[in-house]
Amino acid sequence: MAVASATGTILAQDTLSALLLPIWQLLIGGFVLLALVASVRRLARRGPSRMTTGLLVTASVIVSLALVGMLLQ
Image (cartoon, rainbow, N blue to C red):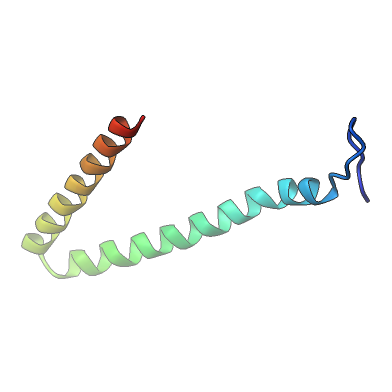
């Protein structure tokens, strides 16, 4: 069903994408969560020294992205 706006344009496609948007966000979030769990599990099996290195690299990437975000703001 098409919905006409005040200007007379049809917004059916926008309405459909607005309904589907949360589903796609949940699906993508689920895949990211699965990848994160798999990578942390593999890293934990490799031992404490690899785990420490992985955490340090991850922390440095997070800090770098935060700084870039602040500088570009």
